[in-house]
Image 1 (cartoon, rainbow over the protein chains, first blue to last red):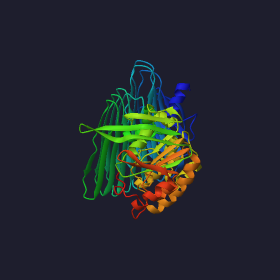
Image 2: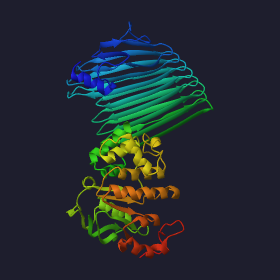
Image 3: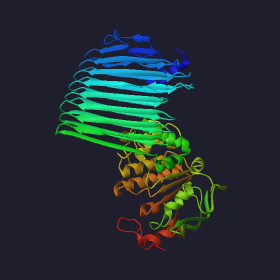
Image 4: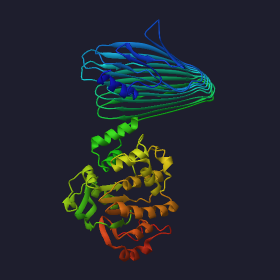
Length: 305
Length: 245
């Protein structure tokens, strides 16, 4: 791995060297290292590009890292990754994609992730997207995330776009079974002339299922963001949707939370707010010795942390 | 040493000029603990904001250690060692108490040190370190954290704007005690804007501001007897009572 590749891995997966446990590293559309463990088996799909990740029932305290990096300009990469988290397992999956594009061609990675989370299993999933490079070629990431949650399962998803992604269209869908709980945190920053669109559809199918959607974003320069999170209550359930954005410069943001109750015992709440950085916050940080730019950076970083 | 020379702050009040601060001069020597008091709307907070650089005076000069800082901005004054604890502190989504204290200090603070600062303002530290300074905190909690951000710095001049506001009386007594010892040990000079008798009792000097002017100023022992008839039953200065000039 060269320095650029190592930096990308550090940015998207906090990886410094080979990860512990199971991993699969994909570089410019090809495998660049894999390790399965006794409980986590990674295999290559035979019918289409991508991998299957099978986590055996009751596997606990193990992790899987599946970072993707693109460093060649003009690569368009499409993968299908299926995750099977067995009953009673408790694991961490770290995904993410980093693009370094110094050329003029478009670099694109579209990851289609299917999660099957077994009964009473717990999953923490972290996915970070990051782009860099001096070229005029755009950096595009279009993730599709589909989640099926069985009875009593818990899933916490952190979907983060750090910076440098010129265009993204994110589609996330989840179906929750009885007593399943999903916490979906989306954090996104756009700058320059970037575009981001995020659609989240959560179906609360099972009795007493719970979802919490927390979306925080910062839009700078002339960038554009559209959020459309939906919570659909098909049973006795609870849902809370929260969109919170900081708008700067000449950016544009639309937040369109949507809630639907198809059952009289569905309790669904949404809230959405878009606003500038508060002047009182800037002044407070200036009284601590920061200049205005530094203060803005601290506020944005904290907000997206 | 802080020196204010003929400071005025004039605003436009529907077409006619209004002096919020009207030709105020005073000096605060190093090592002094000064309480500024007076009726609401008399100009106390504006004066503090002028010293911090949040507002710029329309006339006069502000000197810190002999250097003219009248035209320096907030950041520059902060770097020279002026600090301000706001009456209504800002809240920050996502910023933890620990991070805010570290930012105030200028470098990452060890957990133990953060805990000491919080304990000194009456917060059970372990519960607060990783909490965000957002709307989940009560007014009193945010206020104490604000005070702690000044305790985490070593300042030439620390200004506290009504630190007692929003803090219940019982915890207030504890706060006053730690305030006195900490402020004197950490900072060179301290200005507290307050209506509370207990805080005034800690002062070396008291300045009474009303209608944008200094009504009276002097050593605590000289000023307190003048003010004593003007406190209400909770030992707070009657905000619009006898003090109107």
